[in-house]
Length: 275
Image: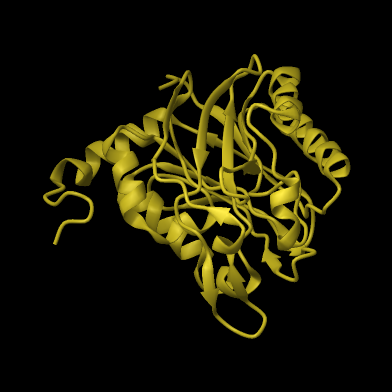
């Protein structure tokens, strides 16, 4: 892991079904983050296109493809490690994967993660979603080795499944990224406590970039993007109704101090999924 403290950022935005407009917003926010010293920048889930669910199979693209190429130019332009939220990747059966991409500062693709847990829920009349109608679940956790440290990748609903994060932590994760489109209803109830729990139990920094506002699919997102330190302290938090660039500092010495002072990861007795 990088020996000295460095800046990280979560981008918060309200994506639409206009890819070009979304890309312009992402690039502008990423540029602001880089200007404030961020070396790792995280965008929200489905940041490049957020439209009616029925259109997803037609919108989905191959990776590499046009959208991934355009996102890679942002990383290269600002010389940042860039978690490009997630985009819809064309799948084999007419559906798509929800895929998060990590680009290196030279624009090369460092890692690709397909969202494992699909959001199929009926919480209320306002929140009824069946992601599996148009999306395919991934099946592989992804830990990316970078110059800044080991980054564990996840997306939104994954946040409710602690076994994924424990597997990433046991593999060496120091930073957990959570690009999201967390809903207003579930976000108000669970977003902060889940983010803090994942940080505390895995003794990792957590960078969670969320969408806000109403999307064309009829779901309103919670905003409140956050950066949480390994002690579970929220060190940066966005509002709920605007584009924001959330910047905080990752301090490797603080992470090491937490893990030394309270060596819970060394005390794990049960494997993920154990009784």
